[in-house]
Image 1: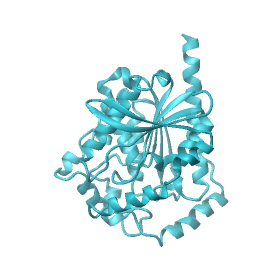
Image 2: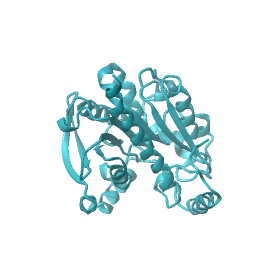
Image 3: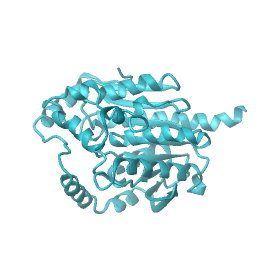
Image 4: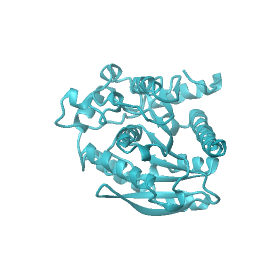
Length: 326
């Protein structure tokens, strides 16, 4: 279920790395303290991140996105030349770890390939805050950006990109922006990598076993319950908390990626089916791919972002042609 060409050699590399993943610990959320430790280790590993970006010619600025009574830190990355579009980046990390530097490799490649500026959101993390607070931070950053928070970027083709938990947050932003249609209209597309769109858990999530790669299959439902503490199953499935069950009218075109071996595969497939009822959707479910595959040393880490870059370039070109046809 993909247009991305994968030859035998590429599949061999994916299978080889899957065998390595099978021996590695799975990502799990079992308590409040482990994510804090992992976050501290992550920040230590990112020492010198700004310098690495600047050596690639990328300009960096820290700003505060102010909207809805919130002040949300954002990290703004700009290409050395003219800016042709804007990407609002929502990082992954299971809602409990991560920061704007987490996506530096992907964002640098996007900047160089598409000539876009990237605005990465430093939203608050669970469990220090509730999931709703993280959702509110992302919405505030989007409203600020789309309302002209960075004046020289205002009016450029704008895209929202999210991976895993970031894909969930991006989808919640889009659903909540339906109350502000003039802002929603300014988003030219969404790119979502293997997101979570049903916080009650699809049947595939409920059936995930210990053989699941990257994610802790047996603990996934419990993790979703911990994430939405105090909610019943029906409340977990209410939109926008669970975007799969929301009203999608007015949403922009979307590029969705899933993985055949990802227990979250059905979240992506079902979301794409519903989204396709209201807008153009391109769906890729990569064969034998686990969760997080754009970060692993296989051909997927090159082929999948290349499709994203081409898709964004196509929509920037369309946006530039459209005024000439009026």
